[in-house]
Structure formats: C-alpha cells, structure tokens
Length: 291
Image (cartoon, rainbow, N blue to C red; front, side, top):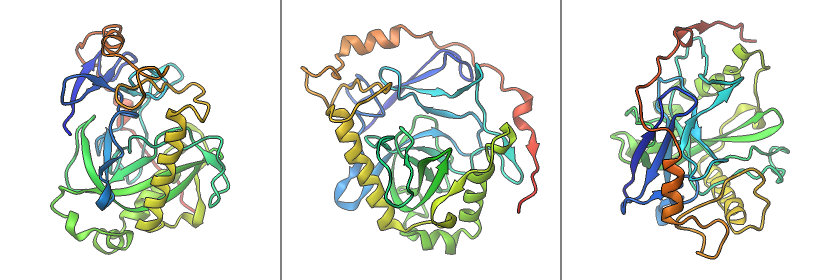
C-alpha cells in the first residue's frame, strides 16, 4: 500500500498537523486505518515514522484528535523538543509507532507489573537511512525494551527497515549487539536520561534494562494488536481516544468516518504556512553524572 501526506499549519508550531491519505486519495487515520502487518506470514510490520533520526521535535500520532494526524507534543503551552543529553543529539533512531496497536491502560502486564501507556506501541528503527516524518515503512522486529515511565509500561520495539541494505544481516537482538556495538546500551541510556533536563527522575526498566529477543517482541506486538481490536470494536472504553476511522469500522458504527466528514476535519485546520524557527536553546547539550 502507498500513502501520501498533507501538511497543515506551521511546522514547529501548535497548529501543525500532518494528515495521511491512502492510495485512493482518501484521508485516513494512521492509528487505525493503516494495517499492522505489511506481511503477516513473515511477521513484517508497518511502521509510521513520527520522528526522523537526529531531530529533536517530539512529533507523535495525535490519538485524541479525529483522523489522528501527526502533531508536535505540547508541554506547558509550547511545542516540545527532547533535550540533548551528552553524548546524544536528538533521537538516535527513526522513531515511530506500529499502527493498529494499543497499550491498554487498564491492563497490568504480567511481566512488568505495570499498566499500558494508552498509546500505540513505540518502535526504534536502526537502519542506515534517515526517514521522513510520516513515512510508512516495512520493518521486522529484532527485540524489545520494557521502559517504565511514571508507573506505566512503555514498550520500545527495536526494528529495522526490511529495505535497508543491512536488513539481511539483522534477524534478532543478538545481531544488533554484535554488528552495532554500543547501540543498545546507548538506547537504554537515552531513554533513561531524556527527561532529566526537565527536572524529572531517570526512567526505569523491567528486566534490569535487558532487551528481550525477537520472539518476545512479536508476542508483545500481537498482544497490543488484540488490545487495539477490543478498543476499535468498543469492547474497551476508549476514554479520550479518538477512534474514528475510514476502513475498519462498519458504516453503522459510531467510529466510522465518512469521506465528507474526514474532509471537513482537515478543512477545519490551518492551511500550510511557513514553518516556525526552531529555538536555539534546542541545541543545548546537557551533562549528567552516570552512576
């Protein structure tokens, strides 16, 4: 499947939105309408890239808005950028989410003892290419890290783009350890420290910060797909989540979104204008003592 993008508003501002269209040119939700699987028989998943590697703007699928466009996260009324904690600059992978997954905040994970974070499952793509915001790529899972963020389970799946020139060499988390020495340790360090400049404590991890292997990762992804199915079929309370979709729910469902309704959503946002300047403070480097 192919997807196109439509930007609205001013990049790096509160009104920026990135909408998705399918091959027929219809607006869709990247949360609900893009299939989880690119190839189910091979366990190849679709990944929606929210944040290209080396960038700082914390872009994310807007799970509480109609059509779930990508927008920049907001903190204290301002768009949010992740801090640079030495020796890292911005995100150190292409960062995004697997569609049609959901970490249920009412479900306590049997391995971590913590509930889900109410978002699609996060993925860190480790290939050679810097992807584009909104790009939908096909990835294979290599392993998974269980971060505990303020008492919630926040899984981080390590993946590689199947079209990457190195993809054939990476088939499990042990291959990352062997072929990209230090990358996994840096990944744990990044997630542990990235909120410290904001005055928050270091994040913690289940399994003593160890990565679980490919099979474990695929099991977790499939579990979050089941949670999403319960969400979209109204077996689970959606809370503030917006479950409007074009392709999944039947026309009689309150979650079904017509083409006209989708067009009205997009028309109600600001037209594309010149992007805002990224503040120079975003380039600041923070240094902290590691224990």
